[in-house]
Amino acid sequence: MTWVLNNLEQIIELTLVHIRLSILPIVVGFLVSIPLGWVAHRYRHTRGLILTVVGLLYTIPSLALFVILPPVLGIPYTSEANVLIALSIYAVAIMARSMADALASVDPDITQAATAVGFSSWRRFWTVEFPLAGPVLLAGLRVVAVSTVSLLTVGVVVGVGSLGYLFTNGSQRGILASVLAGVVATVLIALVFDRVLALLGLWLMPWTRSERRARTSIVDPSRSATA
Amino acid sequence: MIEFRSISKRFADGTLAVDGFSLVIPSHRTTVLVGSSGCGKTTLLRMINRMVDASSGALEIDGENVSSIEPVALRRRIGYVMQNSGLLPHRTVIDNIATVPRLNGVPRAQARARALELMDTVGLDRAMARRYPAQLSGGQQQRVGVARGLAVDPNILLMDEPFGAVDPIVRAELQQELLRLQRELGKTVVFVTHDIDEAFLLGDQVVILEKGASIAQKGTPAEILANPASDFVASFIGAERGKRALHLREVDGRRILVDGDGAVAGRLVEADSA
Ligand SMILES: Nc1ncnc2c1ncn2[C@@H]1O[C@H](COP(=O)(O)OP(=O)(O)OP(=O)(O)O)[C@@H](O)[C@H]1O
Ligand SMILES: [Mg+2]
Image (cartoon, rainbow over the protein chains, first blue to last red):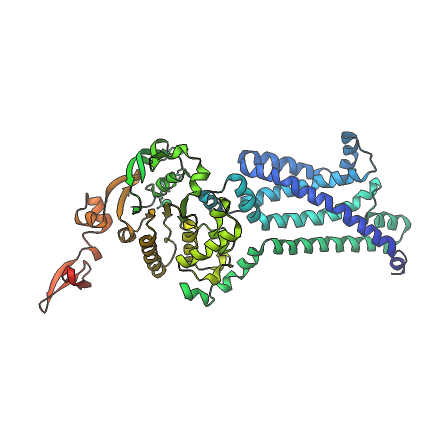
């Protein structure tokens, strides 16, 4: 505990860096998965191929990615870009499947109805299918967020500062408190991200709240007023 | 006026859903397509707004061939009401009703104001405007569906078993409501059902279909009842049995009507005293 108090400034700084670095891969994963998921959903025959390829990406060990990416992309080994690109790839790998599943979860009767009243396919995608895919999409995004926060600690091996530094530092110098502080801070960030996303979902998808309430409100008195 | 001329539809899997169908649907009247499941009613209806394109033949709306009209634009000027309301679950009642005007670029405030008026038109309490479809009963959802279908004041209203999924009491209510609306609005309504009672109640013209959308008989309900064209029609409308096979019985010098099940249906009175 004294170690933590003595090094509080450093822990807080690493936490902030960790948060900053986590956000980009999550956002990239989300954005890139939209067209991928759309293609996989829209052209069913591509679904297997796309999801298998992104699934394989996820199986590449992170250390291997840190070594492969720099020569391929012409970036230094010990750069934030190296870690961020690797983590973005993992995020896409998880999110693309979520996206395809999320779009498939939308009731086809509803998309048909939207078409029948005059939605163009572009407009239907953004204003009907995408929002209705939201709940499944959000579940995938929460997994991505937690996994990114946790994977980022590995970046320390290529010299990118994050809470992972507390692990290596702690184990090299035999300070258990350092390792524990790193673990606790990482878990806390993951939990906060998860909560924030869940709340964002409730705010952006108010109808999902009403669906949960629907069972009780269907018996409300205003029903008999018109029924 | 909507005119089907020798329309056929074969789906990609080889199903011949419609086989040489011809029909004139007059304007400002209700035409009901009735027939058993799978006879091609929905397919016919969806050809009118190009959700389905005919394999052969011509379909004209007021003399214009629909194949020359861009589908999205066509659908926005034709009201469409379907069985499970087809409402957007993520939009409130008022925004569901305002959907098509919004697609046409009407400003939100104006579209919502009109949506509120339409709620009155279809008998929905304005207090429900901010609810989501999941918070309404089935009957209320259907009313919202009808209001949405009317939102752009279309000439044509397509209704595919719109009251099929509500209980009989609510259905009867919605049917009366539609009759009232139709008296006020005089739309060209094309209504699909497999319930012959509903067809006779709502239809100015009733078209009885057999498999492959072949027309067994068409005419006013009275014409069809007076003169069923075939045994199929007679049995489909139940002319020889049950509550449509009425006969007279004298009771205390008064003439009473009794149906095929022996239940008392009413009294025979002079037409002008009705
Ligand atoms: N997209 C499709 N692909 C292949 N066959 C289809 C398709 N849509 C309809 N059919 C077939 O065409 C025939 C007519 O179908 P349709 O939906 O028009 O019947 P319906 O009269 O509306 O029946 P219901 O009363 O059950 O709604 C059926 O045999 C059906 O299986
Ligand atoms: Mg049908």
